[in-house]
Image (cartoon, rainbow, N blue to C red; front, top):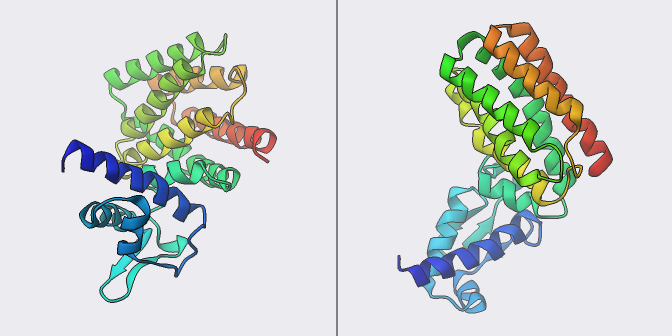
Length: 233
């Protein structure tokens, strides 16, 4: 695919994907590729490639002589980072944030407990470095820098759990944290007790304290849910 075709393909996806996830095309809607190609002023081959990407996300299904049918949300690949990003950009943002944060509250405490059991010395050092980076960027409206260390912190927790299923959720957690910052569902400066909790989690993991690591991470997750009650009711 040429750079120009890739740009057209991205433009189609960035318009059609959010429209589908926002419900502008309800489940069962049939999209005609010829009509879409005309609407977006792209070739049929570019349109077909965009449809293939949407199919890989389970947002649509393409059937010969029928067209491209929008699938119900129950069939979407809701863990796809791009689908998460599109949903967070729409009107359903509060619901999506809450759904993803509840998922985190179920997974991350267990992952932290496992990390306390299995983390390597290098992973413990990385976790501590991330937590200190969060502290350094927690004042003075440095949310981008804070986000970078926050995402890295939670990736280390998931990876250090030793469970490859948990580790694959790193991109999901990254999209949640990034979306909160991008859509201003964050306080101007992070909550100080929450920042301190990350330091304490790093300490518990380093010391191999399974119960404490799990309890502290659950406290972080519950705090995130409480913030959503205030910022995205």
